[in-house]
Length: 100
Image (tube, rainbow, N blue to C red; front, side, top):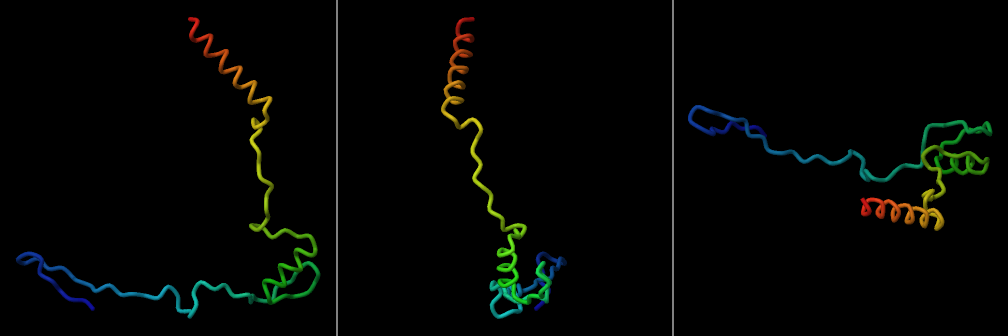
């Protein structure tokens, strides 16, 4: 609904009432469907189910881009010998600064 409102003498503004829209026209907007248009997998068969398509890909050793799991990375300086060397280096630098 739109109405005119006088905010000062001779000054008018349009006042609109906010409209509340549903997030989606679908009854359950956050549910992802398992269906898809027929898509060919590398085995030559067409699949209409996402889960069947992915299961066949996994069985054939394929990796779906975006779903691969990477090994956790370790810092190269995480070994105790490198850490001890770093501590010695910092100590040596501090001693040099203090001696000047």
